[in-house]
Image: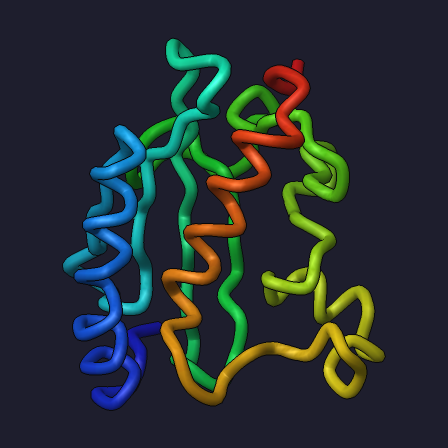
Length: 148
């Protein structure tokens, strides 16, 4: 379901910084033209430069709500393949979700995060860039291989 115009405009504005960040980290970004709330990031772990991961970041409302984040086989590829996922604590390839406080899935699993110190940082800054930084940080510092 396509997102509202305000979300589209906010994402368009903030995605430029995400694109620059992705390129600076030897990655890439693409927007799904059929649904302007879906972006695809190609990221790689710093210590495993031959590995590439495609991440679907799907926003329903931006910036007030976290995105759904899934790993895919390719841009617009399958989201139900465990080998598309990195092995990182909290990244649950078997469940096809990330149980961390920067994803819609994490907040659905832990509703208490909505009101404690883990709450979504919707006011100020660029939450999309923060999500990209978090994903890249985890790949650079917590990556333990590719899921089987």
